[in-house]
Amino acid sequence: MGTRSNTVVYDEDVQILNMYRQMDGYPDGHGAELLEFLRPISIVNGITTGRANLANGGGCLAAQLVAHFKTGVGGFYIQPPIVGGEFDNDFTYIIVVSDDILLSVFEWDENIFIGTVPQFKKFIEGYRA
Image 1 (cartoon, rainbow, N blue to C red):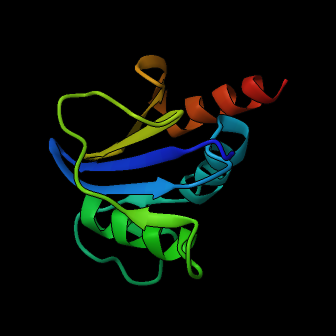
Image 2: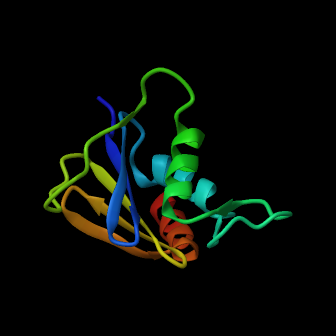
């Protein structure tokens, strides 16, 4: 049996993506892969030429996230929004995009992390220890 997870993206306060992962959803699996995806990205308002690793707001980041992780049949699925704050998978990663990226991690219904991408890196490194 796999360790299931959801990655939920909010653009400000509107949920725009709920991506389900069927296996390897624990922090030193999906969390570490999510960190590697997010670390180089800067949030911008408007497209800036000549720069790499940008996301033009939450919708752009969500689309890049799906393109990065969904490489074939199975494994990842788009699901309806999560409502009411009740999570039904082992881990839920919440990404809130405004001027920057803020993450929360839940193990079932317990919040085990909240912070920025650099703080998330420390969390993942500590989780692996």
